[in-house]
Amino acid sequence: EDGRRHRVMLSARAPGEELGDTCCEVSGAWQIERFAREHYPGVCVMLNVAPGKGKLPLLGIDSGVKGEEKLLRALQDQERGKCACSVLLDRETARPAGLACRGDHEFALYALRVPPETQDQLRRHALARARTGEEAR
Image (tube, rainbow, N blue to C red; front, side, top):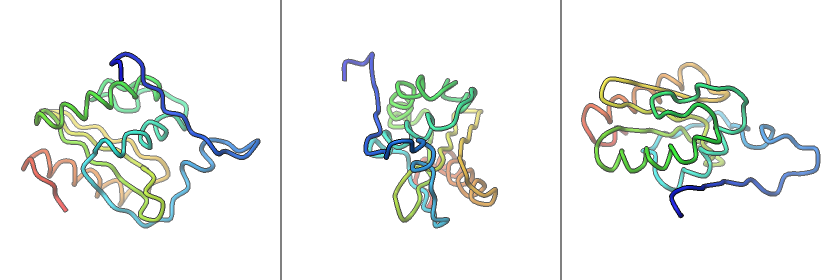
């Protein structure tokens, strides 16, 4: 909470179990919600599961480690009406599987193991919220 360091840890992994094995399991049943503080730890883990860069350039998130601070900033910006972020959750486990954010003239989407039609739903949800400033359910 000092504004400089945030670390989200995942515990209860079996020995030899990969992070992606448990964090990215999905049932195929989805729900989309407005990104909120209760989603923050799961989204941080989601961004750290897969290696690579350029995950959510709109938020300045190049990697999962940098994402922790940037996601907190996105939550604050969303409350001020500067952006709209929607999170895709697995309905059975409530684990985040994707995040979509819309700023003034930019859009970014990051989703793991999610079919294209579900990514489209997540995209439409974030865009609708950005246009109306309200939840699109």
